[in-house]
Structures are given as C-alpha cells and as structure tokens.
Length: 592
Image (cartoon, rainbow, N blue to C red; front, side, top):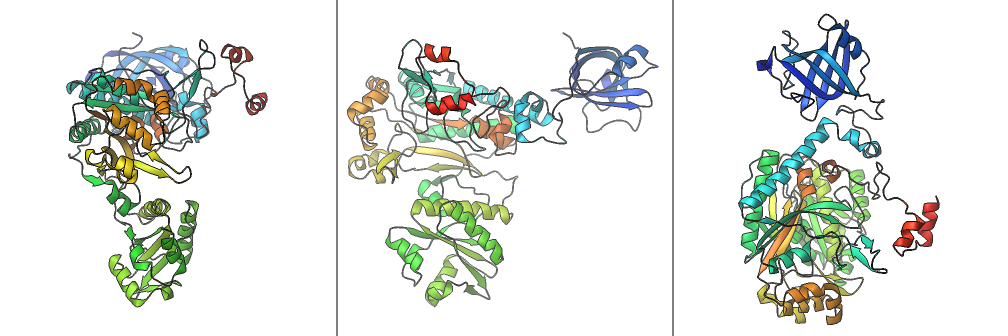
C-alpha cells in the first residue's frame, strides 16, 4: 500500500510514530519559512509540516506545491504545541513533520474552488463534477447514500428477501411516462425499451416462486425534468407473495426506520399514521400532504353557491367547487395579496378571491355579494379571527385542489409555519383505481394497470369505474412521496377486465402485456409490493429536495451531462448499422 494511514486516522496516541499519507493538497500556508499544508482524502484532513530544520530537502520540494496536487508524504507524528490544536478537526491534536515528499501528480489551477466555503454555480459544478465531488459536503452525501443502500440490503437479508436483477433491455409496454428506446441491430425495425421500473418482472418473479424479492433497480424515464426528477434514478424495489397490505406496510416501515437510524442517526416511531386519499384531497388538495403545519382547505361550495357572487355561482353550476384557506394572522397588504393572486394564476386558476377579517367582520370588495348569514357561517367554518386572510379558489375540482394546495405550501413557507427539523411520515391509502382523462375522454390507471381493486368493488369495474378503490398505498414525508405500491392482480380474468376499463381490447392487451397475462394463468400467488425512491430518501436525509445533490453524475434540467457531453451525435456508419435515419430536425441540430 502507498499509505499506512488515511487522513482521519492519526491521534494523540500515535505521537512519535512514523506514518505515510496520501491525498490532495487542500491548503498551503508559509509561516516564517515553515510550510504547512492540510492533506485531504475522503476520510478527513491531516496537517503536514515542512520544517527546514527537520528536513531541508522536503521543505524545498514543498515550496513547489499547489492546491489539488496529489502527493505522498512520510514523516514523524508530533503533538501540536499548546494553543495551536484544532478542536474542530479529528486529527487536530497532532501534525506530521515530513521527511519525504513525492508529488504523484501535479494539478493545474482548478476552474472551481474545491471546498464548501464558496459553492460554484450549477453549470460549473456539473461540468467539473469530479472536482465538485471532492468537496467534503459532497463526499459526505455520497457516503451517506452508500450507508443507506447497505442498510437496506442488510435489512432485507435479515428478513429473508432475495436480491435478483431484472433486465435493462425489455419489451415496450405503456406504463405512463415515455420510454427510452434502444434500436436492435440484429433485429432491424425492432426496439428494446429501457425500464421505467421492474414492475412486470418482479410480478413474474412472484409467479416463479421467489416470495420475497428486492433490488436496488436503475430506472429510466424520458420525461420533463425538475429538481426532484432525473431521467435515470434508483428504486428500492420490493415484492412479496402471500401477503396483504398490512404485511407490506409493516416491512416497509421497518426498512425506513432502519435507513433513518443507520444513515441519518435518527430514531423513528412506528407505525406511521395513515390517511385515506379522499381525506388528503379534501384537507390538503393533493395526495402527498405536508403535515408539519395546519392551514387545511375547507370546501365552502354548498355555503357560497347561492350567494350573489356570480363567479362562484357560475363555477358551481358547471360542476366545479369552491374551496377556502385561512392564512391565519397573516395581516397581508394589498400588494402581498396581489402576489398570491398571480401565483394562483400561474398554476391555472382564473383568480384568487380574498377577504380579510377586521374588527370581527369580513372586509373586501366581495363582501357585498354575501349575506350576513353566509359571512357569519363562513367565519365560523374557517375559524376566522382578526388579522386572518381568507383565500378562495373556484374551479373544477382537480384545478381547485392543485392550485390551493400550492398556495397552502407557499403560505407555510412565507408565514414560517414549517419546522425544518420535524419529520412527519404518513401512509396515504384507499386510492381511486382510475383517474378520468378529460382531454382523451377515457380512464387512466391512478397507479398502474396491475394494481388490484378492492374485492368488494369489482362490481363497479363495468358499472362505474370511478367508484372503484384500489389496494394501493403511498408513503409521504413532509409533502414528498417517498414511494408507493399496491397489492397486484393475480387473477388473469380480473386483469383483463381492468385493462378493458383502460380502453385496451383483448388483442391490444395481448400485444402489450401478453407475457404477464400468460404467466398469470399458471398459479400466480397473491402478491404485492412497493418501490421507494432511493435518491429522494437520500436527498431528504441530506436536508435537501434536490436529488442531484445525492447522485454522483446527474443530468441538467435539459437532460444533458455537461461533463461528458451527452447526449452526443452519432455517426452515419452507426446509424446504418442500426438501420436508422435521423429526421430533419435532428440532422439540423447535429449540423450545428
């Protein structure tokens, strides 16, 4: 080995011993002819002293050192003098007096600072990711991710799960997001899809008799990006046979508790609370509520539908709803209220009606359209007091809930109601089986087409799909979905009926999902599972919502990697081998 110790090993008990260390020059200081450097590796820092009275040759060589040079140093461990010890450093009681220096690789001046004092902009960080990853904070995040992954593997092994890898090249099946497509060279005109998830394969593994499966699976989706999404991400994928919902939730709570303890050093109390989907939508406007603060939404449709306010009346007559949120003790100015109105419009609302409570009464240019009776009941229902501001959205239910849920989160931030140190886990259960697609006039699967309906709701599959509840569940933390899953359909006839509700003819179902439908005929056990987003888990453990902070080599929001230049052009020769031809737009872009 080129080193006897790492840069976090040496302590006061090692005084007078010899040591050889390797790493990067973190800082270099010249104090009165004595040169000090902090030597860095992923374990920590060690102060190295080049003293001409101790070793003249190494001192001369040290004068050539620059930041980020890679070096090997041998020397004697000494105790730092009184008053010079660094209590913030694990090795702060000692320093190594160098007697040998080898410059393993000299570095050019880095295009960014390799420390946490001044974080470069995102484009620089991603272009020089190998330098960004040297920063102590990034090394800590990567090590935390490793700990989380190892904790998951150990937990599953202790609970009799088997880790099995599923294919990356597979048959294209419609599951929601767009697939990444890989052309087949040996089968011209045919393609593979890269997996959005191992869904069909893990169900097939249950049919194969592997009753407890897990995998840290790489998944790929060609979708528009934001800070909590990447084209490739990692799932902690779980599937179990001969189970019901309670069994899966219990196993998953144990997993999350283990990861938070091992990777975050935090104790979680289980079981986690549960909330029906309908309650979540009613109170918070979405299915991933942040429960660290209140400001619940209240449906006031029945109260205001007979008012003289035409906007509300018209929306209700067209089948929409009116919801209200009480920004308690906000005392907003007119300018601030207008900012919230523009915020609501940004997400699809026609506007944001408002009323303030002053002197025990409602005050706004809208109040005249509401009778005293309605106003009094409104204040009672909203528990409104002086200093409060009531915001209203009147839209179709989906838009109303979405907009007001976003307003709620903004209010929580602006009014400083959210405790960043608080963690509130919640299971959302009893999801609808289907979600109606207004644009295409058809039903979509709320989760995916293989989710089992509740047994007592099977009769609604043909009568009224909107009434069907699914055996599905999501785990939510502070408004972020950590993962979701369901009990799966193990009966081929029920699977065909569900696919029929989604608009698939028997022939189309066979073309898209034939291998699963065939497998279900041969003794498929009752089974279910869940997939957690490992990237999101690690991001939250690291105190951020940006999953790029815990992915070694992420893509930008434009799905590009500035470091390696991907995606990149492809040669005509390669295109010919794949029997492909680029369209005119692609040719024009490559020409640039």
